[in-house]
Figure 1 (cartoon, rainbow, N blue to C red):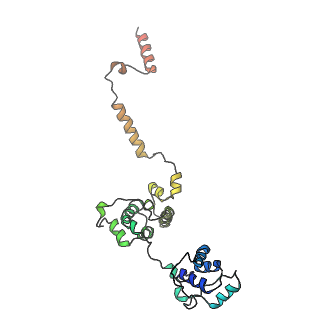
Figure 2: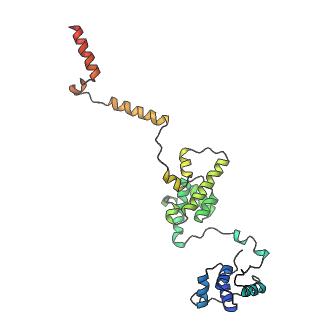
Figure 3: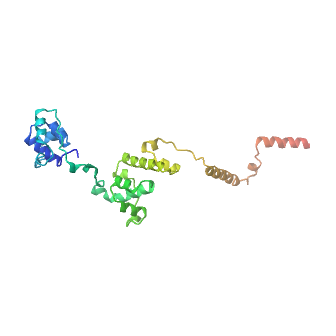
Length: 250
């Protein structure tokens, strides 16, 4: 933990009870220097009761004395063994109330267009639970018939860079496991910037060539020879050979 508990209340106490500079207080509390100045002017944190960091075992009095004697001294948070690793234990992503109803649609989009993403990756992107994701994967969600897949980036549930990062991570994992991906899957696994810069590749598979040949044959079979003029409108080479045959017969 790099910041004190109740940082704004701690800043209020330091402004009221010490002669530390605004920069020193801002650096210690993880705030902006102008915000600390606003606390001193009474424009910010009005009504907030000061929180004593010394009495609450977060700061040594000797650190305050050093800071008051030297404006360049940076206050150091007191070591607390119980707080180690506290910043790593984070809950699911917070989703505003106005957007929570859109989460199922975003999950459906991710499940449909990025099936390589794990449940934990989807939960990290849109802030949901694994049972909800599983129910949408299995199409057992109570509202599955009314859902529409919508890009979570368009809904504002995550950033495009975050989605690209998770997709690239899934690609590296599948490559490490030796999973062979199709061209369409590889195209999905590139970042947005790379995808926008890629040109459409012409279809060159044997199946596409075979279908083209069938279409040409169908067009030739459907040609209309009912008109006598068009029927006898032969190529120039063929017409010259017919004239030579007529001369020989004469």
